[in-house]
Image (cartoon, rainbow, N blue to C red; front, side, top):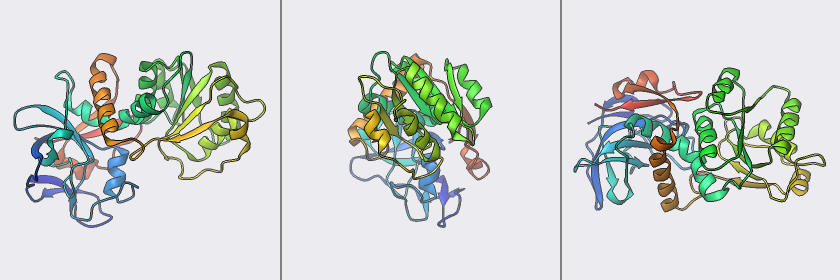
Length: 321
């Protein structure tokens, strides 16, 4: 069969032939329709994700949309190695498949599932918005952040505060109803002060952090200290991504002064049934909630040309003929 294959460690995938999959007990063969290029997919393909990686040769792709032998359109994630979603066919456990709504476009489902679940999971399982609370999305100008601001409002956030470096992308968030946007500047003192003011005015109860690094330090500082925002409830800081660095310097005073809770959300944070159920909830909500994501589709045969093109608020999705 044809697939996007990594044949040597450290190399990008190339379109070519790969062994035909054989099903094991409990598996069926899914005919793939679409597979998205998420940051998780890129990281796992490069062997740089903490969840592990396959040894070459292997097919790339963490998740996708396909059809079953009986004609159902389904979503699947993390196929058995060395098979991935960017192939004509993939073996998968029948009980793990999620049936999709008929009105949901396969390309949108494939592109939105992982970035959308990154906010849906913590906001439904870990830190649910309380009445009157706002949610701060740190790093809202990427695809995950764009969906996070929409998911937060859908799940009950009173207001959303969005941060980002790209002013044009921040302006785009206004079209999603995000009134409060803070540009990340090289000098983070102004950023910290703006976050402190908004957090106090809008009763920020949850932070969804896609960046970590210096901006996370600034937000922790803004939420603590003698003039930080205070209220009867604790602020839940949910760490999701590390686009700006893998470590921070964490002083003790803001934690003691603010009652801030730092939580992690990612692969391994939730039981597998919870993760699968949450992804299904998000995908079923897309048509009725009107969640928007800019998806660019290309034939799988063009994987070599567009593999690294995902960035900003759009997602590349490869379609399998």
